[in-house]
Each structure stands twice: as C-alpha cells, then as structure tokens.
Length: 284
Image 1 (spheres, one colour):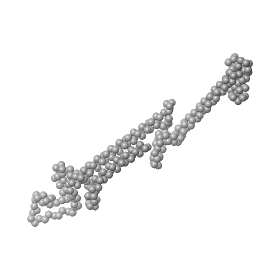
Image 2 (cartoon, rainbow, N blue to C red; image 1 turned 30 degrees about the vertical axis):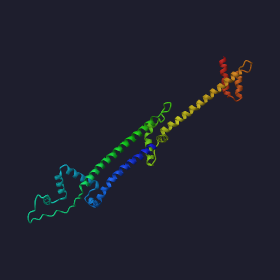
Image 3 (cartoon, helix red, strand yellow; image 1 turned 90 degrees about the horizontal axis):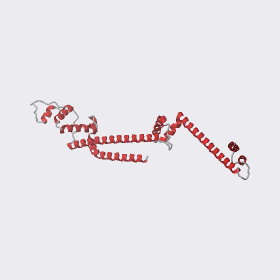
Image 4 (cartoon, helix red, strand yellow; image 1 turned 30 degrees about the horizontal axis):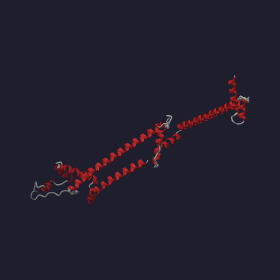
C-alpha cells in the first residue's frame, strides 16, 4: 500500500508539472482571445476549433494552396468578386456602374502571422500531451492489471508445508469474492483477498458445511490421537509396574503389582487388568 501510494504521488507530481507547463504557454494565447470571445461564440466556434481552423488555413497557405484559401474565403463570407478584383488591381469598375454592397457578414478575425504560428505550435503540443497522457494511462492500467492477476494467482495456488492448498475453495467462491470486493470499494475501502475468502466461505452454505465437516474431522482425529497416546502411556506405566513387581526376592507378581499400582491412582483399573491379561497370555 505504501509503494502504491508513492507511485500515485509521483504520477500526480508528473501530471501537475506537465499541466503547469502547458498552462504557462496557453495563458498568453487565452488573453489574446479575450477581446473576441463574444464574436467567437456568435460564429459558432470554440477556441480549440478556431485554432484548428487557423492552423488548417496556415497549412494551405504554406503549401501553395493560397488561391483555394481565397476562394474559400469568398464563398464562406460572400465577398464581392469585383471588390476582390479591384483590391488586387485586376479590373476597374465601369463608369456609372455601382457595385452592389456586399451583404453584412461577420468580419473574420485577423491575427498576426506570429500568433498563428504560436497557435499552431500549441495545437501540436496539446496533441502530443494528450497522446502522452493516454499512453501513460494505458501503461498504468496494464501494469495494475498484471499485478492484480499475479497476486490472485499466488493466493489461489498457495500451499502449506505439506503441499495442501491453503484456499481450496477459491474456484467455487470467486464470484462471491468479486461481489464482496465491489461492495467494499463502493464504500471507499480497499478489499483484502484473505478477508474476502473467509467471508465468502462462511456466506456460502456448501463451503461452510465443508469447512465445518473438516473441523469436526480434525477434532475427532485429535481426540483419537490423544486417547491413543493416553493408552500407550498407561500400558507403559503398567509395564514398568509389572517389571518392578517381578523381583527375585519373591515379591508379589506383576499382575498383583499392576492392580496395586492402579489402586494407588497411577493407572486406571481397566488398563491394569489389560496389562495383567497380556501378562498371563504371554506366560501361557
């Protein structure tokens, strides 16, 4: 979590730095647009759209398509062709003939060439910046997806020292775990795989019963093991008592010694009798 937080802070710092640099270059241009904002809106343009349009005109002019640009301007703004001709010094108006005035049209916004070049450069940088952000976002998303899948695979395949799966019901509970994780994220939390698995196990009737059966079986096996250990210890005590009672001085036999030991509380009467039966069986 700390590493992820550091990555997020570093990414935020990079974004902030890039945005600050872009803002420093764009603010002067935005100030150039300020006096013409009403005209731009009235013409149905946005600042970005107007920059793109100017950049397109600039490209045509620099690529030798100036005549087409003039023709487009004449059609777009309904300019009088005779006036254009006179402005170019190509024709002169006939005597006594009045040229009808051109219809009212919104005058195009003229900007100095250096401003157009700056706008074109900013447009290119904006495109590069957008592409860079998109590429970074895709790389982070791919990296995050791979990291999550690796973590899930490690959790699913984890085994104990005997080679048994630590989470044997994962395949059956994956859908329930996803639902629980979505709920935790919706409430602003961060889900934990182990916690999700444990909750899903007890929420699912089938896996809950399997776990309970496994716990009961383990408890029963432990109980039997304890009882077997107790029996072994009782037989060992009875055997020690038998050997102690069969001395060469004529002391009481092992059976009597075992029973005496049982009465003294060292072993149970049942275990003492079993030891005596085994002794007589061996003697026969």
